[in-house]
Length: 433
Image (cartoon, rainbow, N blue to C red):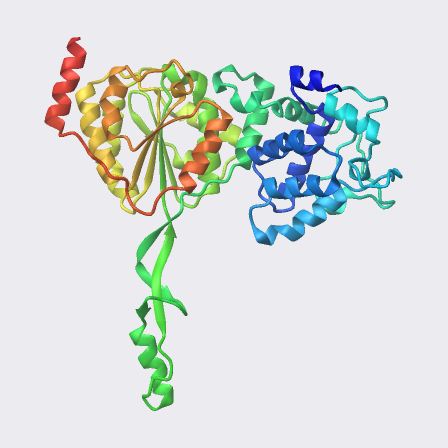
């Protein structure tokens, strides 16, 4: 490929290489190295800049993009060496991509150009380290039927179109792969300090009872001062999701998102609302996703109906807030802000909810559009009492949300709430206009 062609079309990777890189990420995850889809895409993008001719640079790029923990280095080395193992050697005087991708230098160039290669019948390797190499040392190659659909979808997602595509535009195949990618995301909102203390060799507090008890073994003379530290506990997460008619095109995929984080984290409470609030925590817990969504859709009476956000938040504040927010929980409200209820009631209840929560985050699927403006009455009433206003319209936005939750500060954000008397007057003026 000439320089002019690369400049005109962009140096894009062939589908075969992208498919292998995605498979490499899956094998790493299967062996305990937590690799996100974003990290795999970063690795693929990096090869456009460093090329594929230098084995050392190729390996360092993979390590830099995919390894975040020191303890994962040994597993990464083993998986890398066996996954990108040589099938045949090309005597070129230097190590090239052909040394560890089972192809010749000419085929490597064709891969970089996106061209089809004669006899390209690349098989899918096993997801375990033991299955990466067959008895004769060559990579295993299952039949064409095995993994054909999955890998074609993954190849399509490799162009970043799937990560950036709006959930409402997904077809059935894309929904399936989106659900698989959601399961790969790591959810962690940090820890909170409990009032309890636990034993620690480097604690800030003296454990007087244990020190005195041990001193009885040495005639009352304490030879060692025992210490304690404040106990850390996982912070709770509360998700309140809008399943009204205006959210219908997003609801099922967002319920899968809620199902994923509920089964990945220790303390998650889930609620849905349309015209009234329904708790669905037990319906989603420890059930397959399809069964869980069917249970939710059958038991929630106001699915795809009207929207009364203020009354639903009021029900939460009166019936559930004391039970689920008492330990400094993070609250996620997922809604597009379309509301048929009283905006003054919504403002009052959002103010109360913000004061009760450690962090109040509003996720709006419409926020992903560059033309979107929060002009609806519901959003105008809620905005002054939201700590973070974020989009939730595609896979990329979920990755950013996961990163945002993991980076939450140890202290509550500074909140400059508008007094409700002034807020009500502002809402009245906006409604009259």
